[in-house]
Image (tube, rainbow, N blue to C red):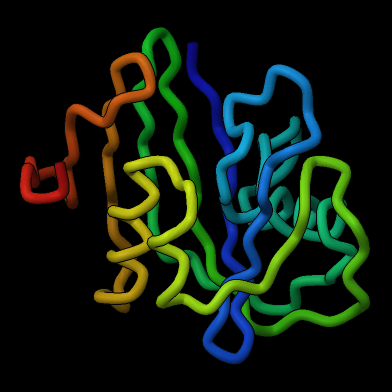
Length: 158
């Protein structure tokens, strides 16, 4: 099965807006911290999707998005292709999210949070690189077993 999704990290004052996923039953991301985002719907571009998801999940309106990466998640029977964005230009008033708690976390503190192992990889790439990158993360039963960056195996992330 193949899925197309979006993921965004809103930035403000050296912090990312993180969603601590605690509220949905049967959530693959339960108790993890992630950015905001979701599935691309029929007729949407990745930019349409992430703007809609940011508004739905946070109440904020993204003005300018920056595409930072294309993520490929290989997990059991699912391949998920994710367009990764950052956004520091947004407006509105944040509201509670029905999927968990929204928290502004200093970037240097994020690595201490419960994250997927692969999230550490692309969050590091967000900090180290300014160009658009490709990152393939292969999981077997929730364990990260393979990393490719720009099509090259990169075992030092494991």
